[in-house]
Length: 138
Image 1 (cartoon, helix red, strand yellow):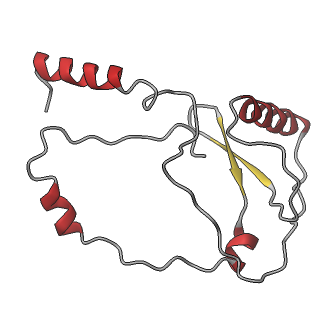
Image 2: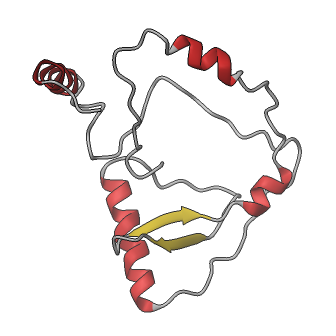
């Protein structure tokens, strides 16, 4: 379904009024806090993987970019996980962390998933339904 001229204008106004929310630059939120419960597990320091010189350059560049926009900060920690670079279809790289060892000692947050039929009922009167893709994925 295509949007009419008035609907397109409403979407543009919405995006303009929430320009910071729809920014292509990753950022932080003050609205949520998350802690990983590892119980009394000893810290895990997984070794970094060997990477090519090109990959090392890409990792350093990505780290510098994340430091510059304050998505990460320099911090001494007993916990460490290796970086994994995943190629994207568009030729870019996706900077990821390999957290399998951390996941193995993490206590799960068990909570019931919402019922799909109840979620769809809440959308019943929606004028617009959209999907959003988070920038990067920090």
